Amino acid sequence: MTATIETRLGPQQMVEHDGALWVACTDDGVVQRVDPSTARITATVPIPAGTPDGLASVGETLWVANEEGPVLTPVDASAGTAGGAVAVGDEPLINANQLVVEADGALWLPILGRDRLVGVDVPRTV
Image 1: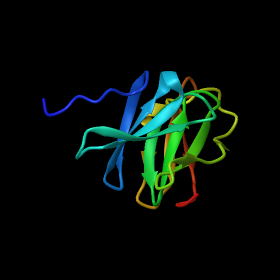
Image 2: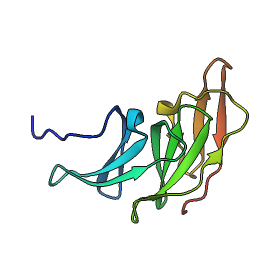
Image 3: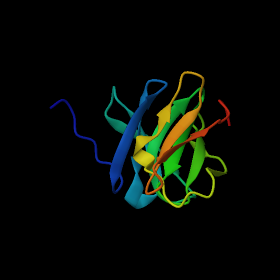
């Protein structure tokens, strides 16, 4: 083991973005930025939509998928601030930790109980 880092409650999905590790802490409704070189939390960003689970890096923006809603919340990773939530549609629940980003920046989410995938075009910056 090289390091242990204490996070907020319910760490789930993680993604690398611009040299930092980001972790979605579902139970506390935040995402946290970790500096892997120091093994320290460098930012904690509240996600207003509530239950952050999936994470994807698109351009300069970190996109956070919430379990319920379902909505996507953009995070300006440089500033450490969350933007307004973007509705995915009228789907009741997404499998948010399975968020996938394509090379062109489109995000794909599996829909629980509906046997389908939903693609969402999102801006590369917030």
